[in-house]
Image (tube, rainbow, N blue to C red; front, side):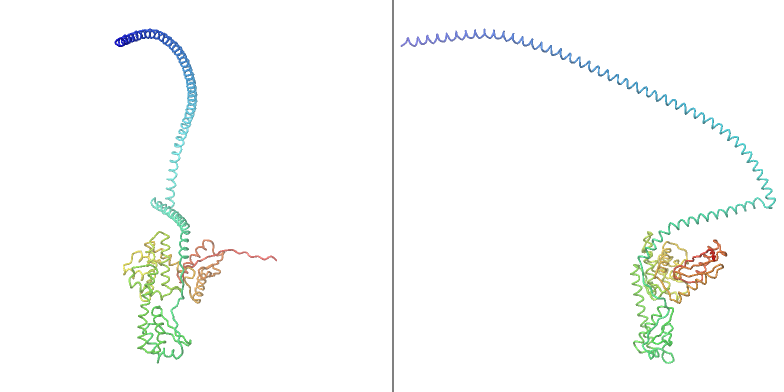
Length: 529
């Protein structure tokens, strides 16, 4: 049993020894193999390195060759570009040289021309100097001749130098005044032509935008009487009732044979209206005696005064004019009973106020001031039966007491040209007043007055020498005058027409304006037999 472990131990030892020997042998073989493999790898690596170096040398040689070729190509391109630039520069230099040569030729030609002009100017200067010498000599001769002529003229006329100078200056002054008058006339004519169209447009616009009714002009009022018995009661015993009535009202009562009518006559329209209303109330009441007459007349006068105040207030509201004094509105109300050529003065004043605003607005002025001027322009007609003077001045004095604006006062006083116009509103009121008076339907007159006016126009025109015939046409707004061509020439025709117009202005009263047209012609009549 002990041998087996020993043998085992010996066997294990041999095994280990053998293993060690084998390991050592293996290691030696491995080393040898590694040495052999290292030498082989070295040779292989060396061969590869040599191959790589050869390839690198070849590649570098190729690169160097390519770089050299590229450098040569770049050098050739640069050389070509430089040659082209050099050629272009040489061409530009040749062109500049050519231009300089051409400019030099031009300068030489200009210099030659300047030299020629200078020579010509020198020749002209010499000629002018010679001419100046001749002119100076002639001027001296002329002065001597003028002096001789002056002495001779003074000797002949017996005038002194101062007198001759004054005469000459007076003649020159007359000529200058004539030329100045001609220039002014031309300027006025040009201004009239340019302004005529604009003014016509403004006037037509104002007329088209307003139209008012008209009434007939009258100074009497008729009162219907139901019976002759009532007419007798109006007259009263021995005329006491009618005398009391006329005394209380201040009017004339006309009782004639006309059946059923009693006529009340008065120039004061307010008194006439009071009398008419009072007489109608007395007839309706039936109790007609002096005491009752005074009572009815007083009551009627108060009613009419209230009506007047209301009419004035409504007129100021309709015309859009505020701030009027109570006295002014009462005076405006009185205009409601006043007529002028058939036109109610209050309606005319309202119409003028409206037209003034239209014209002022067109001209860029204050429409409120224009309305005020237009409404108050005829306020003096309310009391012109009681106060001396024309209604423009009366109205201006009234409004001056109520502290109206200076433009308003001047427009009232100057709308008929009695005083100079101090503001454009005066001219506007004048134009609006003329438009309202002369527009179609604005005013009318009785047939008798109309016929008398036509006859008056024809009679005035027929007075003048050389007038053969005269015809009033266009409802008396124009008169055609035919003159003898053998007695009246063209210049005389113009003077005759102006004289006829002035004569009509002085002798006649008419609404609007009257156009005078004078015709001058030569008629030759022969008969063929």
